[in-house]
Image (tube, rainbow, N blue to C red; front, top):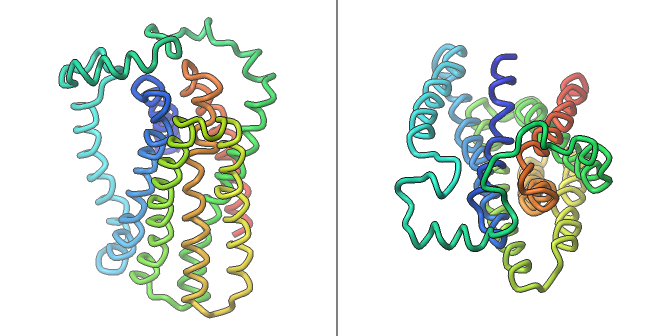
Length: 279
C-alpha cells in the first residue's frame, strides 16, 4: 500500500513537468520519455526472475529497491520545476522553450481553489479520456499479471527465460512508442492532421490492434514463437498510447495536466482490481 501511495504521484508529477518543459510541437516525444518506466520493465522482468532463481526470492524486492534509491538521488539532484529555475540550461534553449510555450502555460502554479473542478468532472472530452485510459491500463495490468504465468505454465519456459520472453514485448512498446511519438509530433507540426485526428487515429493502434493480437494469442496453442510475436506486436502497438490517451490531457489543459492525469490514472488503475481475480 505504501508503494502504491508513493508511486501513484509519480506520473502526475511527470506530466506537470512535461507541461512546463515541452514545446507544444514536441510534447508527444516528451510523453514518450515517460515510457522510461517501460525501459525499466525490460530489465526488471529478467533481473527479478534471475534473482529469484539464483538467490532468495526476497532479494527480488530488495535489489530493485536499492537501485530505485540511487535513481531518487540523481532525480533530486538534476530535476527542476521549469526552464526558468534550471541553472544548467543554456539561455538559447530556455528562450526557445519559453517562446514556444507563450500563452499556453502559466508561470505561476494554480492553487486548488483555482482548479475548475466542476468543469473538469463535467467535461465530455475528459470523461471520454478516462474511459480510454481505463482500457489502456486494463491491457497493461492483464499483461503484467498473466504473462509470466502463461509463459512458464502454458508454454513451459523456465523462470529466467520466461522473464526474458516477458520483457521483449515491453522493448517493442518502447521502440514503437518512439516512432509513434515522432510521427505524431511531425504530423502536428506540419499541420498534416489536426490534433483531434491524431489522438483519435492513434487509438486504433494503441487500443484496437493490441486487443486483436491478445485474442489471437488464445488461438495459437503451444506454438511459442507465434505467441511471442503476437505478444510483441500487442504491446508494441500499444506504444501509440504516447500520442493517444497519454498525451490528450496535455491538449485539454496544459496548466492542469498533472491533476487530470492523477484523476484518470486513479480510475484507470482500478482495472487492476478486476484483472487480479480474473487471472
